Amino acid sequence: MNQLEVLRESLGQCDEIILDALLMRNRIVEDIMVYKEANNVPILQPEQEAKQKEWLERRMQEKRHKNEVADVFESITRNSKKIQARKLFNYNIVLIGFMGAGKSTISDYLKTVFSMDIIEMDQIIAERAGMSISDIFETYGEQYFRDCETNLLIEMQSRTNVVISCGGGTPMRECNVVEMKKNGRVVLLTAKPETILDRVKDSHDRPLIENNKTVPFIADLMSKRREKYEAAADIIIETDGKSELEICEELIHSLRRWMQKRNKREKQGKKEKRLLCVTAVSFFLRNRDTKNRKHKIYGKRIDKTDISRYSDKSWAKIT
Image 1 (cartoon, rainbow, N blue to C red):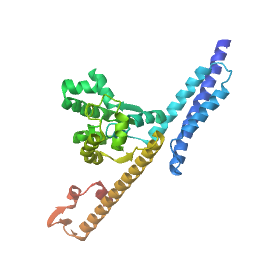
Image 2: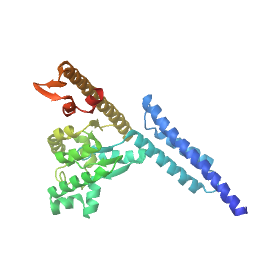
Image 3: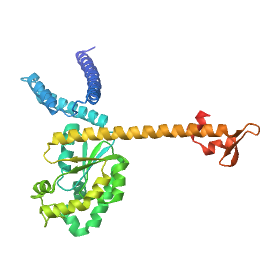
Image 4: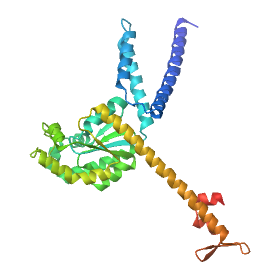
């Protein structure tokens, strides 16, 4: 074995060590998530990431390949965030709300803390059209823009574990809400009209309020949309006076509680269905004709072999 082969073998051994360490690290990341959920510990702890960066900088002082090693650790951190996101959300997060409620801000923060892909609907529609939202309204009309929103939501059915930031008018269409809920959980972000005005007053890409940037006008438009917004939402979060960290932490815990309640309802529904099957079996047995091997069902007489037509797999299994 020449020197080159010896070096390559040593390199392969290093790769084996790195691979085993990465697999162990990923398992530990998953265990940390389980512990946090079980003990009601805040999911988001940005100070921990800051400590890891400080540690790496100390270790790499005056060492060769500092930038290359930093790039590797950045990739490791990014993929650890993705593992956490998949653990928490096996669905899309759909953010809805009035303009200026914080949808873009929160979607950007979720991208930072979980390395999730962001679908900024207004931005994508504008990029595909090659013009601003205001120009789309002026050139093609609002109906065309709303159709673009619907088509983009349908397109998103092939994606999962992404954050979809919707335009303010997107939930006003019932068909859009149907598409949102197919593989997403809808989060309504709210804010007071005064807060909304303060956030959008310097923006000129809001055609619906461009010439009406006043609290009364915004409050009136929000009132008209409130019913459909709340009907579409799975959870509602107020954003006034809260930091991005506080809003996202509340979002995570609210979605977890919502999923727990839904799973409980589904479990209860299955239990009730099984109970109904058992009741049906008891009814059949009490009303059977052992001599002719017939069973009475609401005045009808059927063969035992035909009972499956009146029952599901659970009944068949019980019998």
